[in-house]
Length: 328
Image 1 (cartoon, one colour):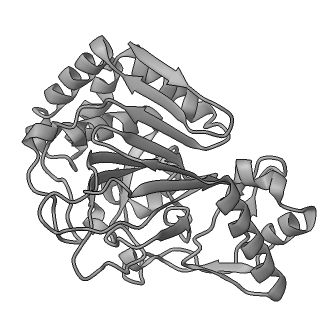
Image 2: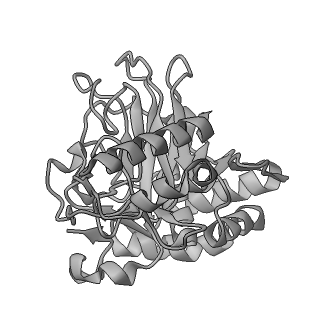
């Protein structure tokens, strides 16, 4: 049985159980045997695109609905996905850790990515792997990025980049020891009514510059010229901000960013992910971050896997060699 729930600005929740959960695991395990198990290959993604049609309708239907309209929160939480938890190795411990060989979790992420658009990655970040590990790394506790464990501020993923992801997918393989590391999300649809017309006008002005995140090593080829934070429809704008990397360039821009941060704090959601929980964030309208936690570096620390999705891969063709899935 599949249960779907949405309440106000809360995230939409899909819980897989029974036949739907069993069928999802069957299809995922079949995909692990495709294309010699090479997750980053064209053949693997092609196989995932075919296999996604075999997923149960209880999973396919809410994904289609979310792609059309991601709701007030801009977040879809899918629970009960197979991750082969009993067979997991120790949590990786290095900042460059990725999943290049087939696994159940990689199969789940790739099929769902193909249901929303196309999986994509950025070569300067995690060497362009399509499935990336998000784990705490010793010595990087203060890092504002996926290797850190202090409070991670709200941000649109790769906000600096002209082809930033449309969706960010975060699949939990292992929760943190104390189960306090909450995925924090805050979106412009919930926050917009709290912003004055004057503040919205400033946020629509090119008075902000966003630099590449530390995970890009200060590179990435993005456009770091002055840009607005809000673009598009006045009543339903797109959002482009990273509170750790976006710099206001005027006094009024500083004030507008402070008001936006306050609105996000008032409307934010927090979810502690458990094994088999997948959070899909609409990166066009919703930011995400994470509350602080204390890693133990004992092989059982928090472990998420991340995949980015682009709705229209064609727009980034100039940056992708041989029409692949990695943007240079």
